[in-house]
Length: 325
Ligand SMILES: Cc1cc2nc3c(=O)[nH]c(=O)nc-3n(C[C@H](O)[C@H](O)[C@H](O)COP(=O)(O)OP(=O)(O)OC[C@H]3O[C@@H](n4cnc5c(N)ncnc54)[C@H](O)[C@@H]3O)c2cc1C
Image 1 (cartoon, rainbow, N blue to C red):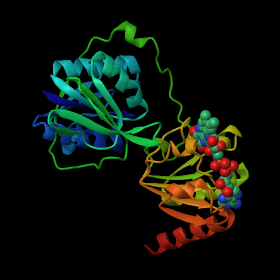
Image 2: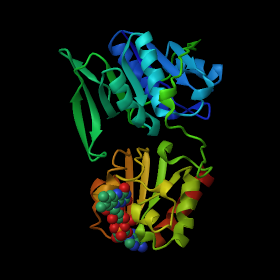
Image 3: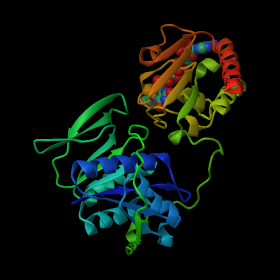
Image 4: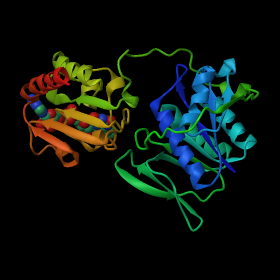
């Protein structure tokens, strides 16, 4: 028995969500008194691979097949499943990222494994039962699921488990798998990044605005606040539907799900479909002129006020704080 973690990279670098998933997988390996093996697919430098040892991986399997340079759901799932079988891994962990959400069910089929996607806590293993707390109904609720199969796949919600450092460099080994033509029926031809700014799914802070901002010409204040805080910008669905902001910024049930440390919602009512994508944020701050806006019910901090008065004051206060820090 062992635990296998799929270490996802972006352009050859591991993301914070990967370090969280490795730390989480290490804790599961420790619970089960077994070792942790990582698998990386794509072109990642040897020292970057070995550095996964810092978060608990003892061995890193490196798959650098040219055909697998870009993410291909089916092919990546086949490689990870092969690695799990070859290393006797009965628990496979990955990040519940865009790629992870595609891989988890495929791995479930390939490994005949129960899947807990959107996990938010370490599994509980009592009296032979293996249960995992996970988000349910697009983040509107939590569910505790029991995985009864011998093999298990767990996809960890980003920002729900802390990064734990302490280990030493991992041993890196090449892992070669024959890539099957049938795994390449759908391929990513090109990746065009929408912006050079902070990536929304990975952002620690998100500044988000809704129809209360009245029009696209008022987004200067949102961008200024986001720049000052090193945050990503987001918006509600009607805002992107109206073309005020790109669809890549739309968060919620039908958009991107985010779980930053801080989510600032400005002029957004807090409809259930919006909350579905943001409710796992650690701290939620709401600015809305209507004290009855539903968003206040889930807010940690709220300001009842006109965004056009509150935001300039907030921006000035952040500038003042940064200047004095
Ligand atoms: C199937 C389905 C899926 C959906 N998916 C999504 C989704 O993924 N994401 C999403 O966001 N929505 C989604 N929606 C739409 C959702 O139901 C809401 O209509 C939407 O979230 C409302 O957006 P909003 O809060 O920006 O606008 P509004 O509901 O118009 O709210 C604007 C808010 O701004 C406040 N306001 C106005 N002026 C000011 C001011 N000057 N200062 C401060 N506050 C002000 C108002 O008090 C109000 O609370 C979906 C709907 C359906 C039916």
